[in-house]
Image 1 (spheres, rainbow, N blue to C red):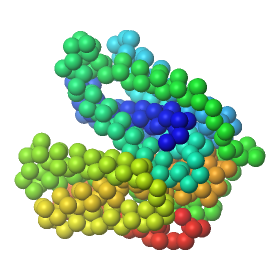
Image 2 (image 1 turned 45 degrees about the horizontal axis):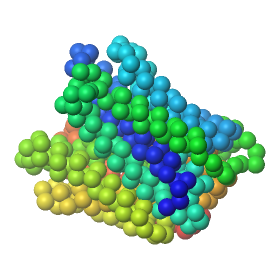
Image 3 (image 1 turned 180 degrees about the vertical axis):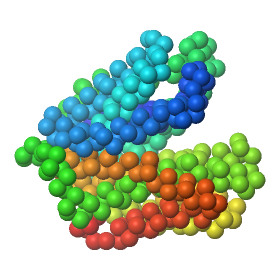
Length: 379
């Protein structure tokens, strides 16, 4: 592992902090005496930032450099974490901080994925990106766990629900310092891009198909995260056991799969096909409506879902590395699929289709499998 990849891996670790806003919503709801819908704005503001700022972030990275965009993202996140660290904010101010965290994390994603190509030795981009996504998964899990843990640690307990923010603040600051010290020879476009030139990339099938693939992949992953637990409860599992065998097991296998892929040298296209096929198989198992096949589906699904993002992303970037920042912006914008696709599955569940509702992630992965079987020119 090259030494210069370490600060980038640290940046990926702190990207996972945004995922802690989901578990934090319950504590915030109780503290501010909010309705469930209003408390859920905590996660909504993170998602909406990806939809709005991904493409502008890609344009900005192409003009100021990917490293500078990383520093800007980390700087915004430091401010977002500093406010609730040092004061007790009103809920409106807290939402602004969370939105700022969403914007900063969007910039980290937009810059972090392509800059990994600049710091990786030849042939190691896909491997390093898979490992980086695994590290991001560790950051997500650790941050979410920390939200509950701080309440029982005396040094943080006095701050209540705010106790986790000083920890996040320190990690963001360390990441900023290490990235600032890093010297990178960046791949840059010869002509500064514009919004029109960025969107024009979607006229090329290879990029349009990849963006749709990311949209469906993220949507399918959020479907799994949102609905596995109630599905298992429907089979008679207690709530705590359904959580353990559902989302915890799913994200555990996702993180495991990414760390494994990041530790071996792999062919991105071959691994993309294997991942898409395994993910589809896992969702089909869940479609059957049988308890134990569903549990097998959780494991297969987690392993299959694990490496779709790094493989598809790296394959797409390698088509035009000089347009990496713009392509990263377009693909990060597609993360908005996590807000839209689950609504379709939720509608099916509301109509009484519980197991059959998994047809939504199944169709998504059917698309990804077909995309993976295409030749080089179509990723």
